[in-house]
Every structure is written in C-alpha cells, then in structure tokens.
Length: 203
Image (cartoon, rainbow, N blue to C red; front, side, top):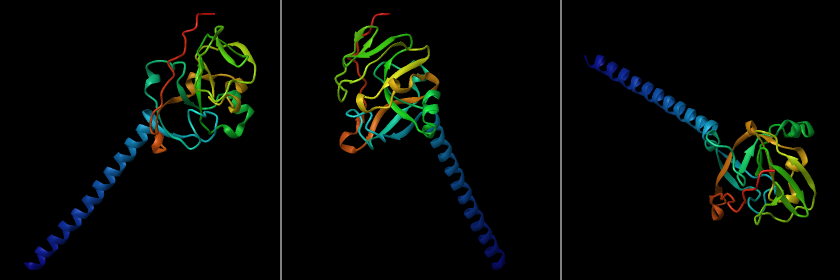
C-alpha cells in the first residue's frame, strides 16, 4: 500500500512539474506575442546614429516612436518622423535599404517649397525655425510636394542627408512619430513638436 501511495505521489509531482513548464511556455509565448504586437503596431524604440538632427536630437539618443496617430490623421508640419528610405534614396545608396531615417516634416502635400537665402519658404512665406543648428547654406527648389508625400529636412541643415538630396517621402514609408526620449536620463521627456509654424497661404 505504501508503494502505491509513493507512486501516486511521484506521478502527481511529475504532473505538477509538467504543468509548470506548460504554464511557463504559455506565459513566455503570450509575452513574446504581445511584445511583437506592440512593436509592430503601437510603438518601438529607436536610436539616433548621426548628427543630422542636432541640436534637437543627439547621437545615441534613445527614442520611443509611436505608430498610432498617423492611422487617424496625416503628419503635421514640425513632426519628427521615422521612415523607410524612398525608392530614389535606395537607388542612390543600395546599402541604406534596411536603415530607417529620422527627419522633421517641413513640406506638406501640394505646397510649394523653396530654400534660399538661408530660409525655407512655404508658398513664399518663410518658416520660423529657431531649433535648427544653422541656416541652410544651399539653394533648393522651388518645387511642389507631390500628393501623399512629404518633404523632410534635418535640423542640422548643412549636415543632413535629406529631401533636398533625394526627394520626398511617401506616406506609406512612414514608420511613426518620434514621441518620447528615454535616454539619456538627464534629457528624458517628450519630444516637443514645433507650433511656431505659420499656416502658409495656398500657392
């Protein structure tokens, strides 16, 4: 009789061990699924590899990019966006095909954009840009931004590989909007979006 009780105890213990492994596997699977879902559809971390967005963003800053808002409305001027390189950029630099870029939205669909005399003009009106590293030292445009596309520039205007080199970003290439800096800790916080932009008149 004592042997039967012992066997039953061993079986019970074995079943409990198996159940605990099954539960652990389920928990891990659900956690991975949630993590993938959040990264794929809601938000994901990114880091800054270059100086193209100085002084707003510095090399090795860690950001959280949210992917929800652009499902409900188009990007606003001044948004800092992360995007996959458009076809023209990939043709110029095939090695960049897997790299995401980060720039500031400057020109919206249908707007006339020009860079001259150290200023960006939208429909002939200058933008108020107190966040850039220095005034642009190049001339560009004027050009009309195509439908469903955006002209993006780096805040470090004279050291940024951006739309004035390779053109426009289709909306479908947008990954999301840079919303929060979580590293380094002394500069942790939300990434403010410029609201000092005028609302240019139609061309």
